[in-house]
Image (cartoon, rainbow, N blue to C red; front, side, top):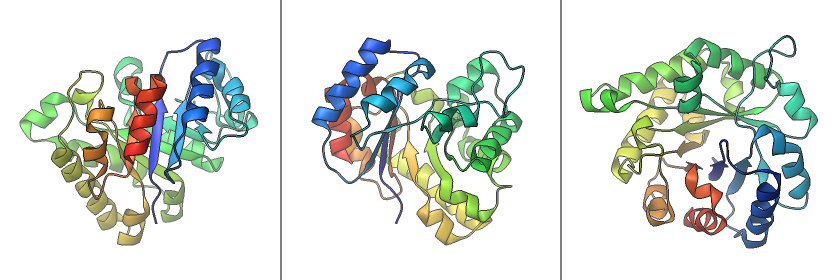
Length: 249
């Protein structure tokens, strides 16, 4: 049975005091839905987040990592460094990393492999640009992103993979894929994995939707059979909004 997951990607937001305050509020208000709840603070606040959530079921995850174990990579963080502070899940391939930092499918494949080699969980992000959607090329783009980064993995590796479909045109724009569009793509993703691997793997992988999920639309999006939760951006920075989205799962 695949997990229901709601994850908050805080991006470059919240200083130390704000991080601790938000975590305390989330812990106090966290509903018991049976879903996995995750938050991804900035790198400089990860250690304190782990400490603050010591007695909570909320998991602390990382927004990114490098593929190398160590070396002359100024400003980068390795899998081992994350594991050392008890962070064992990492977001890889977010559209902002692709767009602003030039991360290619080849680089992302190396990051995925590096994380899995250390037995970390990977939340792999992918999705099409607006022009791809308008031209009807969105399925091809998504299949290509999955194939280039994930489809060379051994079948057993999929036990540590979480997928996050994020239509780029719906991130931070206020636009949202309709629940029907989200379901259509998630069903396509699951079928594609089933064709490449097998139906069992496809049915067990959690596929999250990421793209302007809010309390007002979360329940309808999450009600779709192939949508297993959400990767939440801006709404995860407000405790009441994030809790409302968690309740919607």
